[in-house]
Image (cartoon, rainbow, N blue to C red; front, side, top):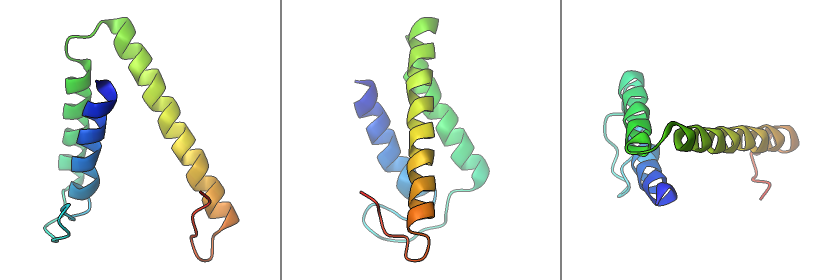
Length: 88
């Protein structure tokens, strides 16, 4: 349930922060403040109706996910800096 909600939110955010719609049509990009508010709204939706312990666990999992993605990006930059080829 959480992953499907997060996945749907990701699909919306990944296009809206850069000004790209899923259909490929360019539009004005989301401002940094709008982007931050969107992330905050997603956090509120995920937290709604959950206990403090559940929220802490979800936060820990998402933090680990973010850290792992940063590690993958850093490794890609180190191994493939010239042509930005993907490691995976």
